[in-house]
Image (cartoon, rainbow, N blue to C red; front, side, top):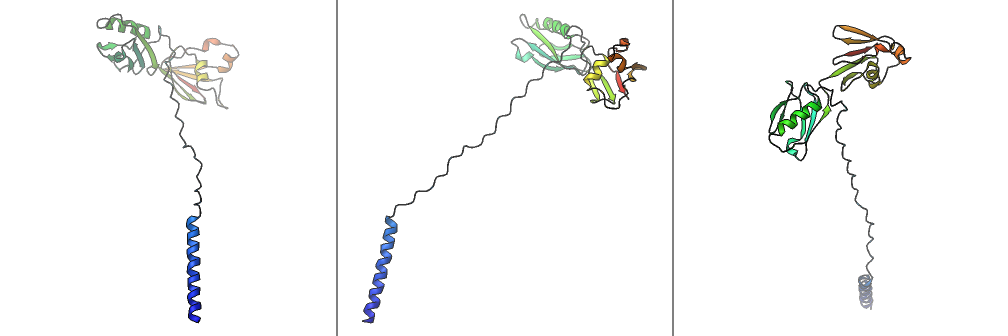
Amino acid sequence: MRGFTTASGSLALGLLGASICLAAQEAPAKPQETQPLVPAKTEAAEPAKPAALPVNVDPKSFLLGPEDVILVRVWREPDLSGQLVIRPDGQINMPLIREIRAGGLSPEQLTTNLTEALSKFINNPQVLVQVMAVRSQKYMVTGEINRPGAYPLAGPTSVFEAITLAGGFREFANTGNITILRGAQRLRFNYREVVKGKNLGQNILIENGDKIVVR
């Protein structure tokens, strides 16, 4: 009798386990949670850098010199167009015409000479010469000035204008006693007087190699 009870209990447990397994298989599978789609981050493209602009010089009076950078454009001739640096001997190199003098000429004069030289190879060439950087002519501003350093002399510039371009004076600058060193000369400039409209003759034009000293 005891053996029959034990067997019956084992049979009941087996049937119960089978029922649980069957119920688990028949239960609908729980749908997997889907993560919302997040758009991939894209880095914004950097804006294109603006092309360098020509220096504002007078094409008739400004004289080109060694180390100046010029842009020569020949219409419909990309192989003949591009930036050139004037050599220390004043010459530039170009296809077809090889060497031609640029130093000591104005951009307008160089345009005329290039047009004439290219006419031997091209029918009615249209040439444009622009100054991209002035390196042959410069002046210095030093001392109690906000932006001391060398500045290109691209056109007529007075002492007053040179000081303004250099950011003006520092707090303790002696604006009434400014010195312009020009070779062996020592020229004086009184900023206070010029501002008041007095003695304007001292507001001279800067020359290549001048050094303005503010104490």
